[in-house]
Image (cartoon, rainbow, N blue to C red; front, side):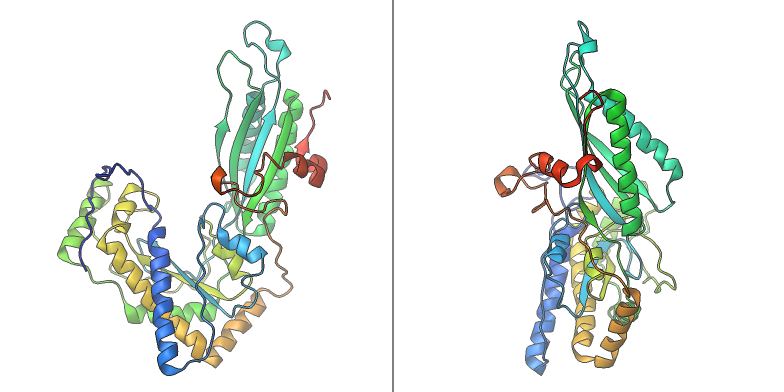
Length: 401
């Protein structure tokens, strides 16, 4: 396996491209497809009955395709689902991710000259500031598992013009779907309060959501066994030197790649991040693993991770993950006693549960799609539809109208 032309320093590629897969998503499909091809070949050679599917699903962290697939019933007839993710450790994902909702909050005021007659205006930016101040006061009173993060998308045009429009994109996470929905309701009330305080209009829409990740103990135990059988990738001296240089440039102790496989957790800790795999896990038994694709101490969503994921270290990660997934997949197809335990665990965990899509019914496709790919309206295009759907719960008229 050759070493790819990458650098352990922060610099653009020769073709001018300055960004890449800092979360290692360039490796996920390769590892999953590699596992599927291995399983397919064995099914054909040994005449193993069954149906094998590979689901391609973009944007797991933003407006994940798997949530749309779940809403459309694409996982309803699946016996089990396997997945993996690049990371700086080797571990089976017997844990819970957080559920989340993405929100779009917009305030509409009235423009005016900020120097000549500001009393004629109503500042949408003032409403945004009040809303975000409320959000940050909210932080004192949420559960330790909650996460709130946002960006201001539009804050006005010029300082001497009272902003007529201002908007915020916000993500609210918590340990489960019910807690997220409670938080979203509170945030909508904050938008209403900010609109009343500033005599503006507010639109507060939770346009996309994800469930938390539901583990499966028998699947996790079997995958742990195969992870230990496959072991960690074998690295060359050049790769270890590359990893250590990345660590030095990141100010991290230069220990190289991880040298251990994490034991299977006895509990199910909550991970702060989210994934659209969560929705799948509430519909069919699901389990995944993490495979080291970047050096110890190097977090994902960094340029150091991007460099490592694009190197032979990343390639070896995908190959090792494919082996573990393939071995586990064959067991799913051939070991009936094992699969009965998997199904029993799933039924116990989901007793009384009925899946309800976290995507608003008005949303037909991700709002983050480029205009040339869009076939339905955006959140803004659907503003009046949201108002008609939910009345004052989502679109608040100002108190002077």
